[in-house]
Image (cartoon, rainbow, N blue to C red; front, side, top):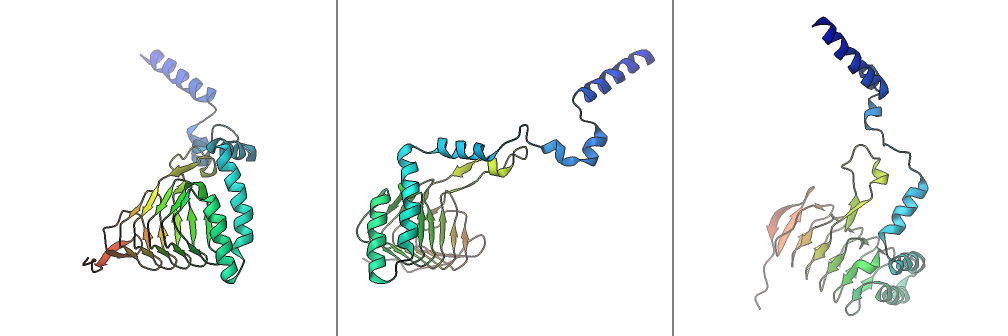
Length: 228
């Protein structure tokens, strides 16, 4: 019996040694237990980025970076007209005239669809990577942020920068106002008539004609509904 136990102990120690991992090693260097299996480089990021998109989408991304950056700083009525032409050309769809103020930023525009009378105040941001559909008569307040994609972070064995992104389409109904510096996260549906308070972070779908605020955003009231 003693000899059998000794054999099992030697086998176990041999197995652990072959893996070059010991209990003492993990206690002294706990990060080794979660280290990525292979070394990754900047070129891995470039390769993964290029694989994610079609050639047309890559061209649009490059154009929007140049044209968006140049038109973003043009002031006055001329700036409104220039930005309308730029994003009418780049976006998946733009119905009617849209008002996009100085400093506003739209990226991955191939996935953005805008309804009539869209107003986007200064420094607001829309990321259309996962698809963003916006209805009619929608207002994005100063610094409002709409994301349709975000970083993956669930695998502790891989640094987050190498885990890619999780896409989640965002839908914003008609007659919606996103208050200043509010945030809409991927996969959320903002119902028709919703008012989102300043600095709110919307992580779940809203109800029609509701008023939401807070972090995360919660319903705090309701708007009167149309009588016609």
